[in-house]
Image: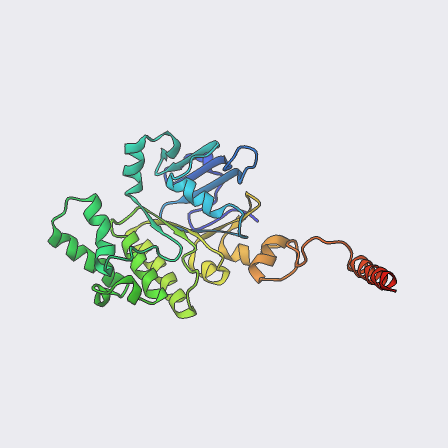
Length: 294
């Protein structure tokens, strides 16, 4: 599968191209040095694009997202966001960069004791010196963009799952971020809410001129939504390409994942002895018990 995308080919993250918002250059990471979760990861994400990182559970997708956000530091290699090497930034520089990065957490992670309005206004109050009247206008603008201006006075407990996710999306774009990170944004949503969230993500990315990284298992929605896909397995990028290239991939692992097949490179059965051997042993055990009883 050849690299591609709307902004041309991707020869690797170490090109230092100024039009790349995120560059992951030969990154390795492990929660302890004896076992690496990520190995020699190379990813380049051009400005303005929406890119999916897909793969089976436990392959390192969310860990990669945390590294890009600067919550973790790589053991080897380097990550650059807007040309700045994350691991070399001090506390002040890292916090300044994070204010330009939005994050939509899995299941939203709203503040349960705040209204919808206050959840969205939180970042504006925390990170700007704007007067409250301007904050109110911006907050209502963000809520209007996700169709929930009328829900401003509700509490998170009064929202449906899809509405809560939309509020979380409005909060994550409150500061007009240059980079959006999505961790399983479609988890637990009904088909209608899922479609709405996907459309909002794409629309907000394009209207803000932002760049988005989407970690997801939802093949159908992601391949309709994004410009480019990186497919991970066992801590490495094993395939990449446009959605069309991923759909038509001849790689057995990618094909099994995209088609949702129950058996393939990832087997249906957990490794076990031959079934006949287990049956024979059971029969022999039963015979021994009967003989002992006699």
